[in-house]
Amino acid sequence: MPKSAPKTAKPSTRRSPCPVSCALDIFGDRWTLLVIRDLILGRSRFKDFLTSPEGIPTNILTERLKRLLEHQVVTQVCAAEGSKHLAYQLTEKGHALLPIVKAMKDWGLAWEKGTRAGLA
Image 1 (cartoon, rainbow, N blue to C red):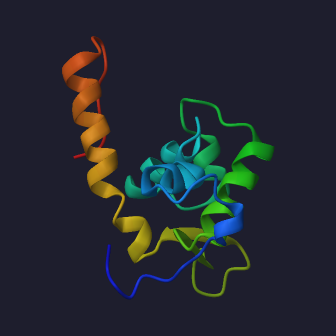
Image 2: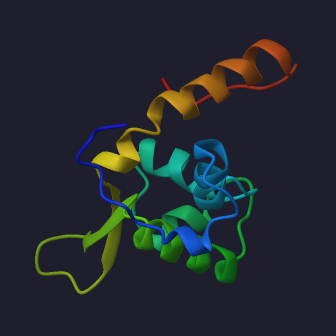
């Protein structure tokens, strides 16, 4: 972890000071890494995430994006110049999750028959 990384969660909101536990508090649920996967694959708008084959419910997607924003894993940007629609993009902190997502993809391909990947 870079020495200049900002502290984003108050210690009182963490279950423990364990870095694995703290990371899981941010992205260790059923949906969040799939949203991050979709961002890596180029999806950026709320409606884009809804088209993923896993079928994330809108209320859960809203909550996960809010959490990722609060923890500075994603940022909101205009979807296009002059557009009122918002899009999401990974921050530097979010891009740092790429090796984790890639390792999970590689594990799934190696150990789970019938899987296929769209993540290079």
